Image 1 (cartoon, helix red, strand yellow):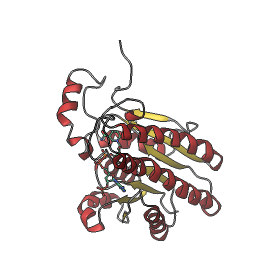
Image 2 (spheres, rainbow, N blue to C red):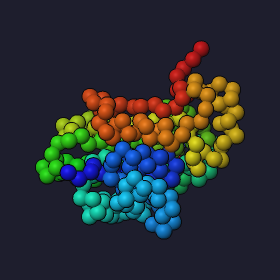
Image 3 (cartoon, protein in one colour):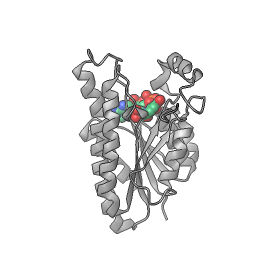
Image 4 (tube, helix red, strand yellow):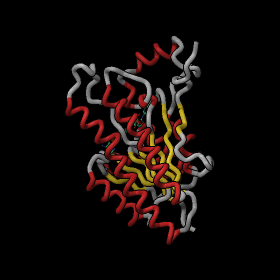
Length: 257
Ligand code: NDP
């Protein structure tokens, strides 16, 4: 028996790193991808290799179709299988700008990275997972999209990000409907305010909001919080729930009077 293999895009930093570390601890063989080179991410990947010595890092821009194909090929050559895809890689807009002024090229960049790239990576990975059923059997396979509360909560100074995550929510539902017959569960994990490089620039703003009652659970979320939810889904511990959205947001999206 070989281990199950999980790919985490953007796995060498932030939330993706937390997910990859958790899945390696859970016993998965782990593949990671990102924009940085193998050399640049060597130190970051080391803690994952303590649990999964064969962990593979591939430099692959998720927005680039040829890079996505190379990524899956590298995993096939290294591990020979893929059981779990975690679409985590994502970006905030280069500049937060009022939607009355925001620029079209920033819109394109965010949508291509956060929505189009993962959508077509899912298409290619799912096709491979379907083929694998003949050689490896019908055990649980999963695709987990890292969405955001921004799928439903408006931020008028980063409209393209909100739109991209609203699109990820629908992509989850589409792929859940398409892939159920092949035993592939598709889920969205929807984080709120999580400590990472992405939120460093707005730390003061969110500190103040948390202090004044934005959340039910009064603290920043962590990559480990998000990773716990992904782990449950990757291990097939949430059966009969394909298409589900798991909020990991400390109650941010719960309406209160
Ligand atoms: P970070 O900015 O800390 O990390 C982003 C990761 O994505 C990096 O590993 C980066 O790789 C990778 N990445 C970015 N662009 C590309 C690309 N074009 N191709 C391949 N990899 C890419 O962000 P977070 O960890 O905070 O965010 C991870 C996910 O969680 C994102 O989808 C984000 O939208 C979502 N999220 C984050 C929240 C938060 O509060 N932090 C809240 C809700 C959702 P590299 O380092 O090589 O560039």
